[in-house]
Length: 212
Image (cartoon, rainbow, N blue to C red; front, side, top):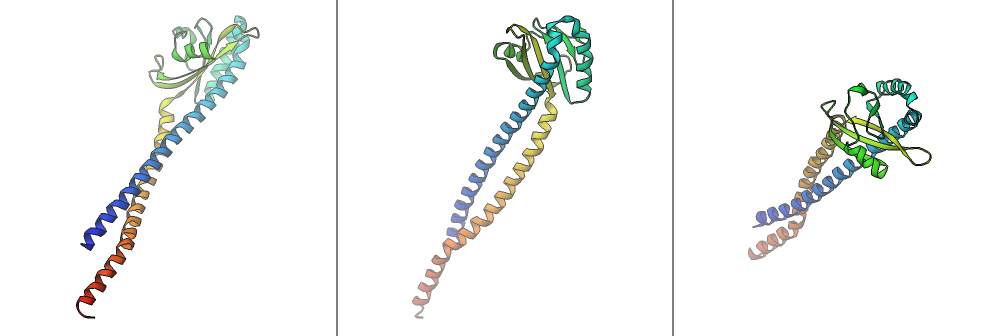
């Protein structure tokens, strides 16, 4: 009976420990994902702002487009980011990875539509030109009077971001495994401690029954 009681106490304590560790780990995983995504969006937003400042003269005057293409190509060569400058009508006028003349009209791209409506648009989708999934952030570019001139768009490979998330998540779930092992040891210790008085009482009762 004592053994059975110890087992029940151990299972109860262990279950509480495992559930608590799982909830905390899940919460940490969600928080890390949100934080990492937020940091990536912030970085992309900074790069889009830089591209906007670079693209503004060319979007305001078509004569500047040739020089812009060279600068955007050079900018993309030094980073893991893809840079695209899009006119208000959706025509691509500069692209760091592709020949703009070979690209389709971008006016209906999800991130561009959102940027036109809200100022900034974000999307994760398959790139028809590259054949890979990318994370996009587009920023609407306006003239001083408020007229829409075009869009500065930046993109990053989704696979690289996912690999970073996967690596960090592995650390989080390894911590969960260590927590489960610690919970098992703690549960056993607690169960033994809780049942020790019962064992002592039983031993006393047995001694009394024997006449001691």
